[in-house]
Amino acid sequence: MSTCATVSRELSEPLAATAATATTWLLVEQTGPWGAKALAESHLDAAVGRALEAATDGTGVRVALIRRPGRHADCLPTARHEVLVAHTVPGRGWVRRSAVTDPAELLALDFAALGAGDHGGFGAPHIGGPIALVCTNGRRDRCCALLGRPLAAELAVAGHSEVWEVTHLGGHRFSPTMLVLPYGYAYGRLTPESAKEVLSAAAVGHMVPEWSRGCSGWERPGQAADHAVRVATGETRVDALTVAQRPDGPGRWLVGVRHEDGRSWEVEVVEGLSEPARPESCGKAAGTPSRMDVGAVRQR
Image (cartoon, rainbow, N blue to C red; front, side, top):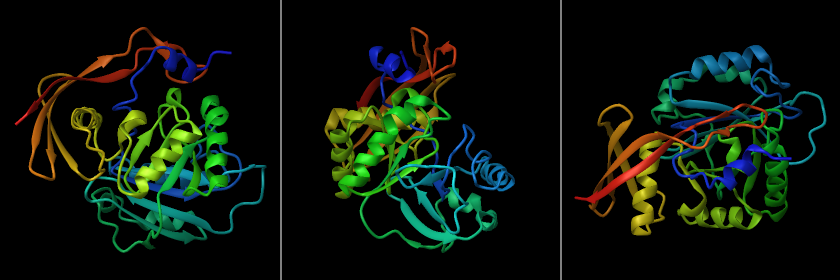
Protein backbone atom coordinates (compact mmCIF):
# COMPACT_ATOMS: atom_id res chain seq x y z
CA MET A 1 0.00 0.00 0.00
CA SER A 2 1.44 3.36 -1.06
CA THR A 3 1.47 6.11 1.56
CA CYS A 4 2.08 9.85 1.34
CA ALA A 5 5.47 9.33 3.02
CA THR A 6 6.45 6.65 0.51
CA VAL A 7 5.54 8.83 -2.46
CA SER A 8 7.37 11.86 -1.05
CA ARG A 9 10.49 9.81 -0.45
CA GLU A 10 10.36 8.25 -3.94
CA LEU A 11 10.10 11.74 -5.44
CA SER A 12 13.07 12.93 -3.34
CA GLU A 13 11.02 15.86 -2.09
CA PRO A 14 13.34 18.23 -0.19
CA LEU A 15 12.92 18.42 3.58
CA ALA A 16 14.35 21.91 3.93
CA ALA A 17 11.97 24.80 4.67
CA THR A 18 8.95 22.59 5.43
CA ALA A 19 8.75 23.07 9.22
CA ALA A 20 5.55 24.38 10.77
CA THR A 21 6.02 28.02 11.71
CA ALA A 22 5.50 29.03 15.34
CA THR A 23 7.59 31.37 17.41
CA THR A 24 6.18 29.70 20.54
CA TRP A 25 4.65 26.28 21.21
CA LEU A 26 2.02 25.63 23.89
CA LEU A 27 2.00 21.89 24.59
CA VAL A 28 -0.69 20.44 26.84
CA GLU A 29 -0.63 16.88 28.14
CA GLN A 30 -3.77 14.93 27.31
CA THR A 31 -3.87 11.16 27.63
CA GLY A 32 -6.19 8.83 25.77
CA PRO A 33 -7.10 8.77 22.08
CA TRP A 34 -6.86 11.76 19.78
CA GLY A 35 -9.08 12.58 16.83
CA ALA A 36 -7.94 14.17 13.59
CA LYS A 37 -8.64 17.62 15.06
CA ALA A 38 -7.30 16.70 18.47
CA LEU A 39 -7.97 19.95 20.30
CA ALA A 40 -11.69 19.32 19.85
CA GLU A 41 -11.57 15.52 19.58
CA SER A 42 -9.95 14.09 22.69
CA HIS A 43 -10.57 13.92 26.43
CA LEU A 44 -9.66 17.60 26.55
CA ASP A 45 -12.86 19.61 26.88
CA ALA A 46 -13.74 20.51 23.28
CA ALA A 47 -14.85 24.03 24.21
CA VAL A 48 -11.51 24.66 25.91
CA GLY A 49 -9.61 23.28 22.95
CA ARG A 50 -11.47 25.50 20.51
CA ALA A 51 -11.02 28.51 22.79
CA LEU A 52 -7.25 27.95 23.01
CA GLU A 53 -7.02 27.66 19.24
CA ALA A 54 -8.99 30.88 18.78
CA ALA A 55 -7.07 32.78 21.47
CA THR A 56 -3.69 31.94 19.95
CA ASP A 57 -4.66 32.72 16.35
CA GLY A 58 -2.33 35.34 14.91
CA THR A 59 -0.09 35.50 17.99
CA GLY A 60 2.71 33.22 16.79
CA VAL A 61 1.70 30.60 19.38
CA ARG A 62 0.83 27.10 18.17
CA VAL A 63 -1.13 24.76 20.46
CA ALA A 64 -0.75 20.97 20.40
CA LEU A 65 -1.52 18.06 22.72
CA ILE A 66 1.17 15.73 24.02
CA ARG A 67 1.24 12.38 25.81
CA ARG A 68 3.86 9.90 26.89
CA PRO A 69 4.73 7.11 24.42
CA GLY A 70 2.94 3.81 24.89
CA ARG A 71 -0.52 2.31 24.56
CA HIS A 72 -3.38 4.80 24.59
CA ALA A 73 -6.57 2.97 25.41
CA ASP A 74 -9.66 5.04 26.14
CA CYS A 75 -9.14 5.95 29.78
CA LEU A 76 -10.23 8.35 32.48
CA PRO A 77 -9.41 12.02 31.88
CA THR A 78 -6.04 13.27 33.06
CA ALA A 79 -6.13 14.54 36.66
CA ARG A 80 -3.24 16.94 36.12
CA HIS A 81 -1.95 18.12 32.78
CA GLU A 82 1.72 18.86 32.31
CA VAL A 83 2.23 22.00 30.22
CA LEU A 84 5.30 22.97 28.23
CA VAL A 85 5.73 26.43 26.70
CA ALA A 86 8.67 26.89 24.35
CA HIS A 87 9.88 29.97 22.49
CA THR A 88 11.93 28.84 19.49
CA VAL A 89 13.44 31.95 17.88
CA PRO A 90 17.19 31.19 17.70
CA GLY A 91 19.26 33.13 20.19
CA ARG A 92 16.20 33.98 22.28
CA GLY A 93 14.75 30.56 23.00
CA TRP A 94 13.50 29.17 26.30
CA VAL A 95 11.32 26.37 27.66
CA ARG A 96 9.06 26.75 30.71
CA ARG A 97 6.95 24.06 32.30
CA SER A 98 4.12 23.75 34.79
CA ALA A 99 1.04 21.62 35.48
CA VAL A 100 -2.65 22.50 35.68
CA THR A 101 -5.71 20.64 36.90
CA ASP A 102 -7.91 22.36 34.35
CA PRO A 103 -6.50 23.44 30.95
CA ALA A 104 -9.06 26.26 30.93
CA GLU A 105 -6.62 28.02 33.27
CA LEU A 106 -4.33 28.49 30.26
CA LEU A 107 -6.83 30.86 28.65
CA ALA A 108 -5.63 33.52 31.09
CA LEU A 109 -2.17 33.57 29.48
CA ASP A 110 -1.05 36.58 27.44
CA PHE A 111 -0.61 34.80 24.11
CA ALA A 112 0.63 37.86 22.25
CA ALA A 113 3.41 38.24 24.82
CA LEU A 114 4.24 34.52 24.64
CA GLY A 115 4.48 34.70 20.87
CA ALA A 116 6.85 37.65 21.20
CA GLY A 117 9.08 35.72 23.58
CA ASP A 118 7.90 37.04 26.97
CA HIS A 119 6.93 34.12 29.22
CA GLY A 120 5.59 36.42 31.95
CA GLY A 121 6.94 34.15 34.69
CA PHE A 122 4.89 31.13 33.60
CA GLY A 123 5.91 27.97 35.43
CA ALA A 124 9.57 27.21 35.93
CA PRO A 125 12.50 26.85 33.53
CA HIS A 126 13.02 23.44 31.98
CA ILE A 127 16.17 21.91 33.43
CA GLY A 128 17.65 18.99 31.58
CA GLY A 129 18.42 17.76 28.11
CA PRO A 130 16.53 17.99 24.82
CA ILE A 131 12.80 17.36 24.61
CA ALA A 132 11.74 15.21 21.64
CA LEU A 133 8.21 15.64 20.25
CA VAL A 134 7.31 12.90 17.75
CA CYS A 135 4.13 13.23 15.68
CA THR A 136 2.02 10.08 16.17
CA ASN A 137 -1.58 11.07 15.45
CA GLY A 138 -2.82 8.29 13.17
CA ARG A 139 -6.32 9.76 13.04
CA ARG A 140 -4.83 12.73 11.18
CA ASP A 141 -2.54 10.66 8.95
CA ARG A 142 -1.74 6.97 9.15
CA CYS A 143 1.95 7.58 8.37
CA CYS A 144 2.32 9.37 11.71
CA ALA A 145 1.05 6.30 13.57
CA LEU A 146 2.81 3.67 11.47
CA LEU A 147 6.18 5.44 11.50
CA GLY A 148 6.01 7.88 14.40
CA ARG A 149 4.77 5.70 17.24
CA PRO A 150 7.54 3.07 16.93
CA LEU A 151 10.14 5.84 16.82
CA ALA A 152 8.75 7.54 19.93
CA ALA A 153 8.63 4.22 21.77
CA GLU A 154 12.23 3.33 20.89
CA LEU A 155 13.55 6.75 21.90
CA ALA A 156 11.67 6.55 25.20
CA VAL A 157 13.08 3.10 25.98
CA ALA A 158 16.57 4.26 25.08
CA GLY A 159 16.28 7.02 27.68
CA HIS A 160 18.04 9.32 25.26
CA SER A 161 16.00 12.37 26.20
CA GLU A 162 12.56 13.41 27.40
CA VAL A 163 10.15 12.04 24.79
CA TRP A 164 6.52 12.93 24.08
CA GLU A 165 4.06 12.02 21.37
CA VAL A 166 2.46 15.12 19.82
CA THR A 167 -0.74 15.61 17.85
CA HIS A 168 0.50 17.55 14.85
CA LEU A 169 3.76 18.95 13.48
CA GLY A 170 2.67 19.36 9.86
CA GLY A 171 4.19 17.55 6.90
CA HIS A 172 2.76 14.05 7.30
CA ARG A 173 4.51 13.02 4.10
CA PHE A 174 7.87 13.51 5.84
CA SER A 175 7.04 11.00 8.60
CA PRO A 176 8.40 10.16 11.02
CA THR A 177 8.71 13.80 12.05
CA MET A 178 10.17 15.18 15.26
CA LEU A 179 10.44 18.65 16.81
CA VAL A 180 13.31 19.16 19.25
CA LEU A 181 13.15 21.65 22.08
CA PRO A 182 14.56 23.99 23.26
CA TYR A 183 15.77 24.98 19.79
CA GLY A 184 12.68 24.38 17.67
CA TYR A 185 14.33 22.54 14.78
CA ALA A 186 12.01 20.03 13.11
CA TYR A 187 13.25 16.88 11.38
CA GLY A 188 11.79 14.36 8.95
CA ARG A 189 12.29 10.86 7.54
CA LEU A 190 14.07 9.84 10.72
CA THR A 191 15.28 6.41 11.73
CA PRO A 192 15.99 5.51 15.35
CA GLU A 193 19.69 5.97 14.63
CA SER A 194 19.34 9.38 12.98
CA ALA A 195 16.89 10.56 15.65
CA LYS A 196 19.40 9.67 18.36
CA GLU A 197 22.10 11.53 16.42
CA VAL A 198 19.83 14.59 16.30
CA LEU A 199 19.17 14.44 20.03
CA SER A 200 22.86 13.97 20.84
CA ALA A 201 23.65 17.05 18.75
CA ALA A 202 20.88 19.08 20.41
CA ALA A 203 22.26 18.18 23.83
CA VAL A 204 25.40 20.19 22.99
CA GLY A 205 23.66 23.02 21.14
CA HIS A 206 23.88 21.77 17.55
CA MET A 207 21.45 20.79 14.80
CA VAL A 208 21.80 18.25 11.96
CA PRO A 209 21.18 19.69 8.46
CA GLU A 210 20.75 16.32 6.73
CA TRP A 211 17.28 15.63 8.19
CA SER A 212 16.34 19.19 9.10
CA ARG A 213 13.01 20.63 7.97
CA GLY A 214 13.92 24.02 9.45
CA CYS A 215 13.51 25.98 12.66
CA SER A 216 9.89 26.74 13.53
CA GLY A 217 10.97 30.16 14.83
CA TRP A 218 11.61 31.32 11.24
CA GLU A 219 9.10 31.76 8.42
CA ARG A 220 9.65 29.35 5.54
CA PRO A 221 11.83 31.70 3.41
CA GLY A 222 14.03 32.20 6.47
CA GLN A 223 14.19 28.44 7.00
CA ALA A 224 15.36 28.00 3.41
CA ALA A 225 18.06 30.66 3.76
CA ASP A 226 19.23 29.32 7.12
CA HIS A 227 19.58 25.84 5.61
CA ALA A 228 21.43 27.09 2.53
CA VAL A 229 24.02 28.96 4.58
CA ARG A 230 24.48 26.01 6.93
CA VAL A 231 25.10 23.66 4.02
CA ALA A 232 27.51 26.14 2.42
CA THR A 233 29.52 26.79 5.59
CA GLY A 234 29.12 23.61 7.63
CA GLU A 235 27.82 25.63 10.58
CA THR A 236 25.62 23.51 12.88
CA ARG A 237 25.46 25.52 16.12
CA VAL A 238 21.78 26.30 16.58
CA ASP A 239 22.17 29.90 17.75
CA ALA A 240 25.00 30.90 15.39
CA LEU A 241 22.75 32.35 12.68
CA THR A 242 19.94 34.89 12.63
CA VAL A 243 17.76 35.72 9.63
CA ALA A 244 15.76 38.71 8.44
CA GLN A 245 13.63 38.44 5.32
CA ARG A 246 12.04 41.04 3.09
CA PRO A 247 9.74 40.63 0.05
CA ASP A 248 11.32 40.99 -3.38
CA GLY A 249 8.18 40.62 -5.48
CA PRO A 250 5.35 38.07 -5.52
CA GLY A 251 6.62 34.77 -4.14
CA ARG A 252 10.18 36.08 -3.85
CA TRP A 253 12.28 37.11 -0.87
CA LEU A 254 15.74 38.40 -0.10
CA VAL A 255 16.86 36.96 3.20
CA GLY A 256 19.72 38.38 5.20
CA VAL A 257 21.59 35.76 7.22
CA ARG A 258 24.03 36.96 9.86
CA HIS A 259 26.58 34.84 11.72
CA GLU A 260 27.44 35.66 15.30
CA ASP A 261 31.07 36.20 14.21
CA GLY A 262 30.01 39.11 11.98
CA ARG A 263 29.85 37.37 8.60
CA SER A 264 26.66 37.88 6.60
CA TRP A 265 24.97 36.61 3.45
CA GLU A 266 22.09 37.60 1.21
CA VAL A 267 20.01 34.65 0.00
CA GLU A 268 17.46 34.70 -2.82
CA VAL A 269 14.42 32.53 -2.10
CA VAL A 270 11.60 31.83 -4.56
CA GLU A 271 8.34 30.02 -3.84
CA GLY A 272 7.61 27.25 -6.31
CA LEU A 273 5.37 24.22 -6.66
CA SER A 274 6.41 20.61 -6.15
CA GLU A 275 5.99 18.63 -9.36
CA PRO A 276 4.70 16.10 -10.20
CA ALA A 277 1.56 16.16 -8.05
CA ARG A 278 1.64 14.09 -4.89
CA PRO A 279 -0.67 13.65 -1.86
CA GLU A 280 0.22 15.91 1.05
CA SER A 281 -1.56 13.46 3.35
CA CYS A 282 -2.78 9.88 3.04
CA GLY A 283 -6.24 9.61 1.52
CA LYS A 284 -6.19 13.10 0.03
CA ALA A 285 -6.08 14.00 -3.64
CA ALA A 286 -2.69 14.64 -5.16
CA GLY A 287 -1.60 18.27 -5.22
CA THR A 288 1.43 20.47 -5.82
CA PRO A 289 2.52 21.73 -2.39
CA SER A 290 4.48 24.93 -2.07
CA ARG A 291 8.26 24.68 -1.84
CA MET A 292 11.02 27.21 -1.16
CA ASP A 293 13.80 27.21 -3.74
CA VAL A 294 17.10 28.93 -3.05
CA GLY A 295 18.79 30.95 -5.80
CA ALA A 296 21.97 32.90 -5.24
CA VAL A 297 23.76 32.86 -1.87
CA ARG A 298 25.99 35.93 -1.72
CA GLN A 299 28.40 36.61 1.12
CA ARG A 300 28.51 40.32 1.95
